[in-house]
Image (tube, rainbow, N blue to C red; front, side, top):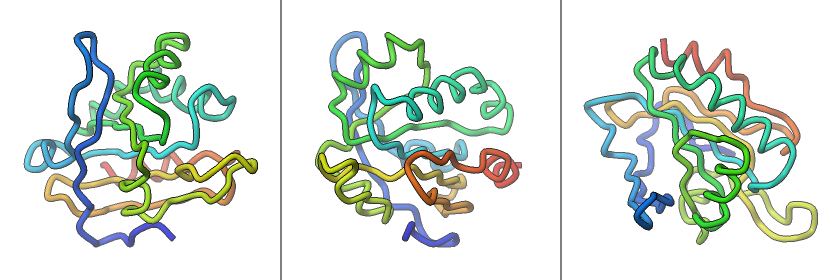
Length: 156
């Protein structure tokens, strides 16, 4: 079960691939400035995840207009995430939760995906400027996408 709406969002500092190496992405850097959309996804280089992140990249301006920063999180390494993002033109900030601590903190660990191991479930959270969860959704299966209309409504 994902963490509950109204609860304090667990802060994290995760790695993202940057042109000059790895950089830290910290959730609380948005506090007091912007809302945050967190999108957990199972694995890079898979069909549904690629479609979701390509669609989000194409609609990123919509989220910026709503005053939100979008961060995508998976258990892939930042190097695999970067290769995947470059191959597919994905422009989102993608961070690595290789040790699965953030995935567990948000209550969205998906055990034994396709028999290969634990990953993040597909999930969406809206975190307000004060660090409080305004929206939380974990999809029924990894093939299902979050309700992005509900995400945008929570931001508005």
